[in-house]
Length: 178
Picture 1 (cartoon, rainbow, N blue to C red):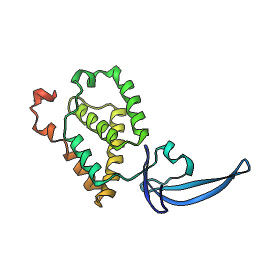
Picture 2: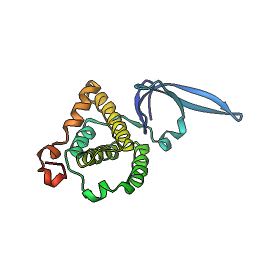
Picture 3: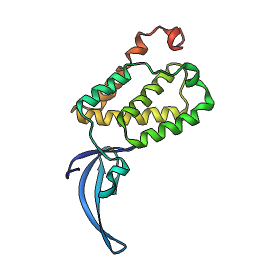
Picture 4: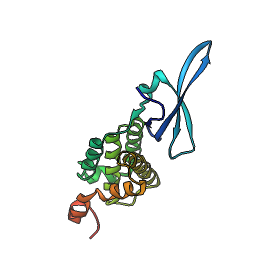
C-alpha cells in the first residue's frame, strides 16, 4: 500500500504526491480517498483507497526499471517502415498508444516513445504524433528525474541521447534521407 507524502505514478498524468487521506460520506456510507497532488501540474484528484489498483496507481519505478527503459530505447523497434508510415494506420496506432499510456506501464510508454522517434527519422510527424511524443517524453522524464534524483532537463537529454541505434545505423536502413 501507499504512505502519506509518497510519490506515486498516476497513469497518463505523471507523478503525484499522496497528500492526505480524506473520509467522505457517500450515500450514507463512509468512504476513504487518497488526495493526489501532481508535481508538475496544477491539479489535484481524489482516488478511492479501494480503487488504486483498478485505476493503475503505482509506486515510482526502481533504478533497475529505469535501466531497462534505456535498453528498450537503445534497441531499434521491430516494425517495418511500411507499417510506420501508412497514414491510415495512425488512428489505429493512436488508439493502441493511448490505451497503453492509460495503463501506466513505463515499459510500454518507453516503447511508444521509441516507436515515435523511429517514425520521426523517416518522416515529419503529424500534430497528433508530435503531441504523443511530447507526452511520453514528459511522463518518462518526470519519473526518471525523480528516481535518479536528476533535473528533469537532464532526464530529457538522456532520453533523447538513448537512440544510439539511429545515429549508428546507415541511412539506407532507417529510411533517412542521405
